Length: 275
Image (cartoon, rainbow, N blue to C red; front, side, top):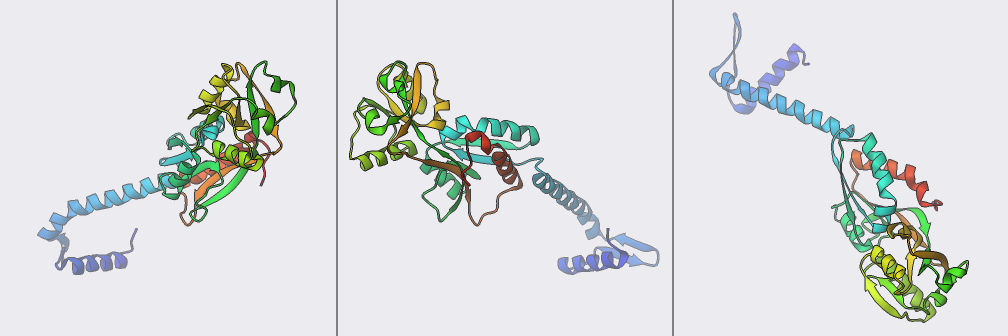
């Protein structure tokens, strides 16, 4: 609410801005000029729009509306995010959520290019455009069909696994890139039986006895455990740090910040924290 002097000043400034008089002032009172009567419904609409805009903005800050876009490795999209999103949905039922489950380099690009608010992946290559918050250190496991001799061991060396035909995931995936690094370190090659795009497909092929594979332990949730078993892979031990990717120099929305809070609350479900 404005005081009478402040209201008079505001009216005078408006009349100066439009270059004419909107009110007739006389001893009998104040009346609208023809131009003032023309402007009155427009002014009421502007005030209504302003109040509606303020209300909408308040709902955004109070997480009563908005949208959060996430990008995640399939490992995390399938094995971690469902519980997170269910919790978030209970708290903020009016926030729309979009999830891109994709490869690590695409997660990085989506966050860097502001097409996603938050990413969940390995440490990004475009470190100058994003911030990485480690959540968990994953490790690789040997996945074999039930009855395979490697499952008689408590742990499996990479060279032992590589003695068998390998079902490998796409060369574009972070999983395959880590495996290629092991091959270079050992000076070895793999007997590639088949290359697939999806981890679930690799699991079904292993269950059918077509070969063995190496997968991050968290991705084991993406495949049916029926017909397969796993053992930790060692020599070398290959850590795989997974975490949160956010853009730098760009503040997140209230809805996205609330998502981060829920993610951190659930991070213990992934395994030991490494921060």
